[in-house]
Length: 411
Image (cartoon, rainbow, N blue to C red; front, side, top):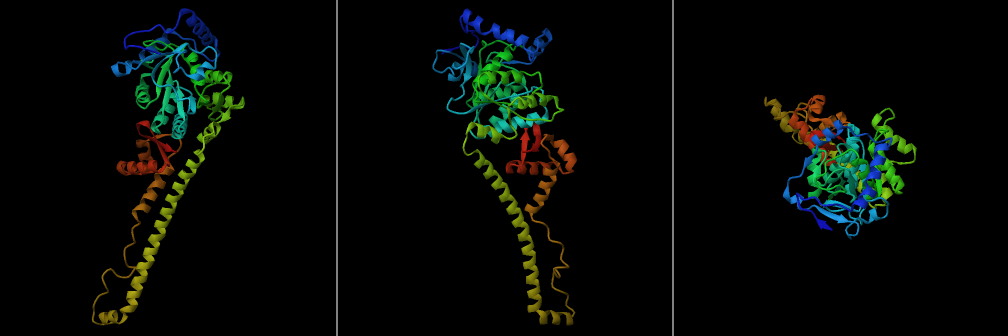
């Protein structure tokens, strides 16, 4: 293993090894029916959308791990045409833990975004490591979900490890490193993104994973290249099903038709990985929800009980002081302050019960597609402060999921 200084480039491998590993894959990527031919316009767009890391603390962490080094991932040794070395910032996935690759469409739908976050979050909560290409869309949202759950994320880049592409994912790039994950690439530091880089890096993503999950994909998609690699490596492939007429779901639906597992819930992946306790966690969550419902029911019952007790006290008071009240009437004295139970103002609902009505009102307007605060405020007619308070409580209770930038959906 060799360290790489911030501005220095290191020759990654001898020329003969380089010729063995790169051109064949580049040719494959160019000729693949699912790949896209790179144009000058494509490259110009890529160059405008990446960010070079300038932080010396990050640059000093870059190191090169050769195949002969002990740190080189053992999984990569099991397959042909793997790189003779990888540049790394942070750590490789822990081989003692399960790893799931989550890949999918860059221009994903709100449904794909919500599913990527849901699966990344649920799997990471059970200790599963999440790996992807950190591309815009599903890849980045899955890593976001994993990090949000306190898990570890890993990214295999189609550029140098000191280059964040797309630049919109820079916060994820930095957080992966900060949370103990890793950024890796077979390309030298300083290398920018190129179209032929991405198909070949996918073989590393699938090789490092125990299971490959495709969330959304068109029929011509780089995610399906990852699935092809996974299939050739003997990996288990799952796909999130979608509506037949949705273009972004056709790739996933075809994978399912070809024999991929149906990822209708994260529990399916956890069972595939043989992780014990995952269902228990869900049952505990459901138990918590049931407990909340019991508490609300008990609150309503107590409200009724208090009303009945108060009415009973008044009736007892009326009976016990019958003669006194009779004398009072005869002397022209008015009835006792407050009047009878029927004459009193209606009893206000308890705060818990009032919140329950608000919860139902807000939850009824939510769907599995994330909605903004403005949209929810318009649909519920609630004050923003009140709406925010209810959303926070629903989120803490596990009923609602908050996506980035203030978007909310049902969990």
